[in-house]
Length: 431
Image (cartoon, rainbow, N blue to C red):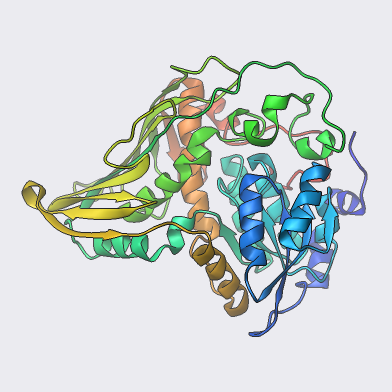
């Protein structure tokens, strides 16, 4: 059942934006002021983020919020938070809160981020930044309209080693980079076949489903199982593959959407309730001005049944230039090769959450865009969504980067958006 709320009434009457602007931001952060933060979604990654934020000397975690009250309670203790709540509206209604960290399932990412911007909060939102392409655009517009900092959890953007690698690509270390490849090759677990049942005590399934279309609780659709469900997630392309897709687009130097997505996606291995492909091969075309030397190609490979690694990395990137090649692993380092595979340079590093959290906190105080600003992340996240659209339809899709619509394909255009629960208080306006 939907809970009526004052915010729902205001959103339906078109007054929520006016009210939010009248309220203004929660408060301006001074250079020496502690940021008051609410953690929304306290599962695996939410727990990691909550502990990382709580460890910062200039942060106070005030809220641990999760639709599963048991998780919220444990997280409150782990974060040293003042409150454990199940409804994110309690976090957003507290004017003392400066920023929220959104680590919910994907279907809540954009609705929660947009509501947070309207409430004057800055946002750190996990990847994939939105459940679908349309929601991603609305997220960008909300961040700009309310002048909020919105950082997305693609931590590679704040890793000095990866930043250096991309800088070398920009400086022509391997010539003109014409092709980038991203791969997601790892062994996932089988989620099995399960039937609807009653949710555990203290787990508010109504809040968990939120604005998505309603269906009953099923154990392997909740918590970690949500990644593989059309209603809640974006498959592994939007879960883990997005990290490598983002680095590929970054290194390729294309700040826009592709005009074509073509390829394949299916289940080859898992006999279970996963709805997304376990295997994907998709190529994206960036035409530039259409002339030779201006076009770019980005390739995505996914095998989440692989008990081995490729090119020394489960998840990684390759950049192919006119004078050489670069191999990059987000977790361990990069290697730069010249002609005839001569190793020219390399660097080792480890990926960590803390630099990305620190970048977000610095952006709160300076007002600059963070390293993984929402618009950059929307361009990268849309690659995940386009790859999934290609897989679901079994055909290539042409895409207009300006209108963010598919070209001449009404069926594909339906998947640029999603269906929502009628009159739910969290459905973004403009969907």
